[in-house]
Amino acid sequence: MADLLDTLKTTFGFSAFRGVQHQVIDRVMAGQRTAAIMPTGAGKSLCYQLPAVMLPGTCVVISPLIALMHDQLRAAEAVGIKAATLTSVDTNQAETIARFKSGDLNLLYAAPERASGDGFRDLLSQGKLSLFAIDEAHCVSEWGHDFRPDYRLLRPLFDRFSSVPRLALTATADEHTRADILTQLGISEDGLIVAGFDRPNIRYNIAPRAGTTRQISDFVAETPGAGIIYAQTRAQTEKLAAQLALNGRPTRAYHAGLEASVRAANQAAFVKSEDMVMVATIAFGMGIDKPDVRFVAHAGLPKSIEAYYQETGRAGRDGDPAAAQLFWGADDFARARIRLSEIPEDRIAGERTRLSALANLVETGTCRRAVLLRHFGESPPDNCGNCDNCLNPPARTNLTELARKLLS
Ligand code: ADP
Ligand code: MG
Figure 1 (tube, rainbow, N blue to C red):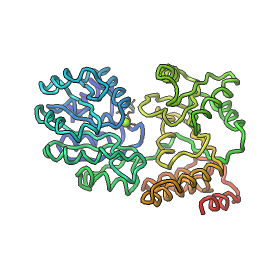
Figure 2: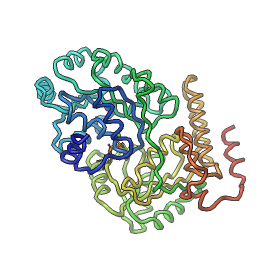
Figure 3: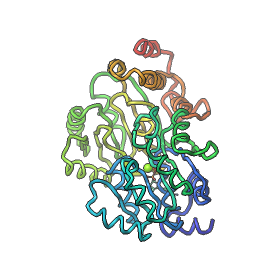
Figure 4: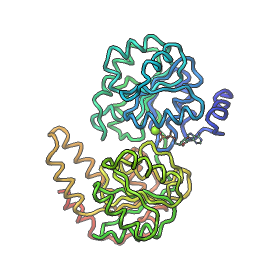
């Protein structure tokens, strides 16, 4: 215990554990397989990084995105942890392999694609392993919104090293996904730790879109601090950014179609800024460490409640008040329904459930937070006092009717 806290301070510079971190780390240190469901920003990385520093051997981290791995690598190296990534774009693979074999790595980040090859298994048997950490573990579930078939190959790999503990981490897991994570990764039910999902400092506001960008520019004008606006398409991103820039607020755009150098420059400017507005597609956000984002606005319907929670969760990680503003339109639902008709038969039921959960969130006249938290399996109080419906209880409007029609 004293050792854990010492390392927390000396290596990571933190004075205390947050939420369930301590509970998770204790299990890992005791060699118990664990799945931790913790909200975005709760500090999942520490749950494997701290044991990786303290345990003899190397912690192998499976992560779905190369960019994410490189962010994590930089952060780990910045605090003096011996870490490396093994991805297709790394040119120093031979060196990394040598370091792993000689026990010179606390952390080795690898993509799930590696897991399928005999080569990786042979490599792992030539070093000493402390832990398998599976980041974004919901990717193992077909039910989840980011299914990655390669995650299914992890269990056979891990089973070859059955005495090495496993830690699955994710922010997004409804009942179904959780169960999948446990079975697909060979973790027993008593190894499941679920942190509270509530982000009490975030104020949720959801309103029907009134057709123009006026609502968004009014919202931006009224809301100080740095913030993110999620637009639906790349073109919308640039158009909206140009319009908002006219009001004098520093504004940038971000989407996957921009040159890598432009994306990097815009992201760096945003991270440093105290009042910049980033108008982005959902390509923006994962792995960005900016605790003082004061608002996240959606110019249209997000993909799912999970996506909404994850995207709005980028606001207010410092614990200070922050706003989540969603503008939705009937056309968003119309488009989503068209998409429903285009997906494979076996996925329609899941997608339909996801869509009606979203409809329920936007149409409700009751506490938004309660709807969100119930979706994640919690039993919140009926009134949070920090969402539009709690602060200004709506008169029963015909919205409910409207949303029902859209879904029927
Ligand atoms: P997640 O993966 O759960 O979204 P991260 O692991 O990226 O979250 O951590 C989010 C932020 O919280 C990072 O800036 C991290 O340094 C910080 N953090 C993690 N644990 C603690 C702690 N115990 N005390 C203070 N800050 C922490
Ligand atoms: Mg993370």
